[in-house]
Length: 90
Image (tube, rainbow, N blue to C red; front, side):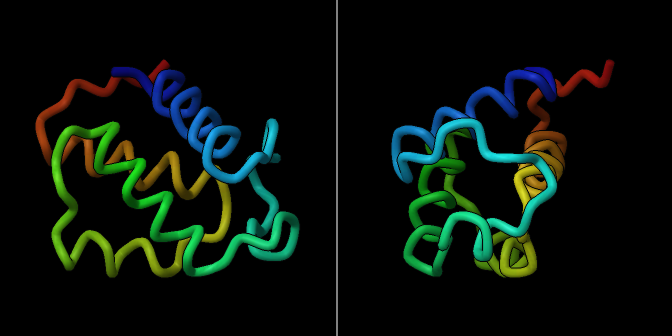
């Protein structure tokens, strides 16, 4: 798994679950797209599905401060490394 694959999957989740096509990487999702707590739960479920494992309570707490697409990708990359899933950086 590469960072580009993570980004592609996150963008697919945004399109499929939230009907947001091509979200900008560094805008506040709440302000730009009306992203709320219910959306955050849906996103966490999508992340769990993508990683193939449930997130711990601590991992879910870490997600509370996430505001941008770039932060989501960084978060998933960190989780993938912790789980031993190969993540390559360009």
